[in-house]
Image (cartoon, rainbow, N blue to C red):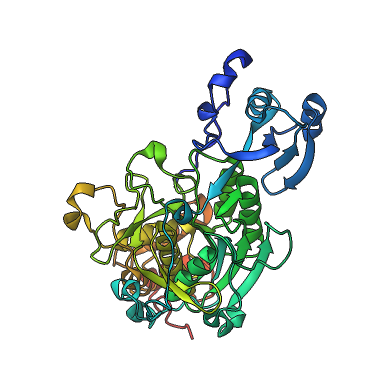
Length: 472
């Protein structure tokens, strides 16, 4: 997948910058809400942030060293948007903008959880599990040992669903309270959101390791720089998948760079498509807007587009998003609607896949999910072509990874010299990897190397043992 690079920021004169709102730099939020006296900036190579501090009276509050993003404190009373525009025009600066807020979409779309003390459900056998045929998929994989980062309101570690599997849940960090206890706090309209998201992942991948990073407060609000910090920490903590059930209008450069950092290390990033019931790309939320992120829309129990869900060309996949049943606060479960809960179902499927093949790249996972999804255009004629590749299909995705012939590296169902060439191109020329990588692991060493190509060549031309013949 292509990853966009930075554009030249602004070429307009400072006299008219107050008419812009940063849309020209791709750093906009239609709500216009951001932290007071804060800027997020990155310097061009060879320049030091101290130059900006000296020129504009700012000070560094925090640095994300992996992406070279800075959180700056401005002087009191400064017009943040105007100052950001002026700094962004400086040749030493790659980008600079306000620290915009991101939100969990459900509380702001008036979607509230319906607690199970009013309507008791069954977690493992709920409608979403039946739609996705999870009982079949979980006979193949449960996501064992795969690490999933949940960047949200935290997690209710005392909930019976998670207490029963204490070793599977971990507190990454609480960026709201600045401590190590990323607990999902009560008292707000978004309380329980992160716990619910974690539950949706656990529904699909009960063996996965869940890492909670609290970046959204009890109202479901968090700033972009903090979310970028959480993405980087999740990557550095070894998370292989990151779920982002949050969004904003426009683009936050610090988050953009943090996602690029994650993807450069092979991490899969999944995001909610949003609950605005629109197909207007100008209203599509970031980070789901980012082309390399898997953007997930919501379906109802009949696999029709949920009435609240966004749609359009930016959508990659769909998953159930109405009457999802998952852990909430205290010891309760709840029913809740939203794309926030569709996205983690897809993240859970990615965890199943990574258990089967830990060497899968993010691009390979994206491709397999797309190729094996169930087409739903026929029953959604008004949205044909605007629901991505359709409903995620866990069993089909796993079958694509397990139903292979050892040595058939290029997936043509024929074992010949082209398979050896495919492996050599992957190792030495940056060609695509075998999918799954096990198809090319002919000597069962657990890694792809030139010896795998040699096994194929010897089999074809020297009548030696076939690929994988001597594996345990």
